[in-house]
Image (cartoon, rainbow, N blue to C red):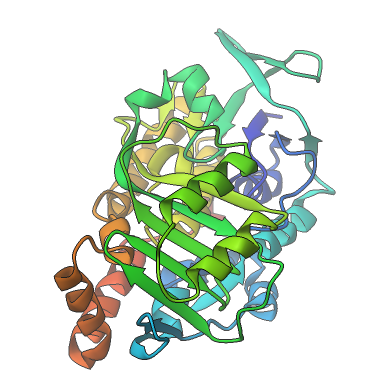
Length: 383
């Protein structure tokens, strides 16, 4: 039985584990966090391709049961007057679900058949003729036939197997932050902009959501107090309810800030190590990350099963089948759209949402990206 170690227990990792255990692989998942991460913003699925994969996984009904439904978002001025409305189907796709709910669902579907190692992380990978020798922070060393990096845009596996993050992750000129606010700013989702800055509260995506233009910052991604300080400094003097929102952020239990960045890598695999999801084709806030992760898991697992565990053949076919589909992640930069740099660009962005024709064209384009792959039916070769 082929043994596979997957790093990352958010979306891509458990989705891959779901298929691999079905195809008879022995799967272990290591996750740095001590438990499943319950929070995070809402994620979404778009179009027939995503629905087909969810259906073949047997989880579409569960996802539909847990969906948030999406909400319209008001773009407002400093006095709270509505300038434009972003429809829920634009921000939430066809199906919107909390990231934590999706992660829990995938965990529940795999926990009985896969080994989970929470509160641990890989420290070294050494490829041998017969496998990959893996050392961990806490678990005793073990050897696996294959290792998968499903550990996000700041992938530890990619760093260990391919090289430093700076060679593959490229900063796009903006940062984003999400916060669980202790204060209630009303039921409606409202988004306020000043040039280069956006603050949003309410709605299904996150209690509070920020995007701002910036030079690259030197900070600790794992220090929420530092994140609060950066937000306080960046949003000082901003109008509307921003001072009250910042006060709530200072008292929030959970705040997370990260860059808008894009992963560029020539090949998804190196030897017996392969990347999936944001580790391979991430683009922060690009709108396709969850769909790419779930479809990528379907293709990678299917090709491994079809190749009867021959990783060289399977990894080459995974890349051949998937790379064109993943190109959508290279063509998007949400920062200038969410936080336009000038008053004129702000007005132009708002005008798109007031123009039914332009909005319809934009939504049709995103739908095309989401379905731009012909899915193989791996059941014909995998049983």
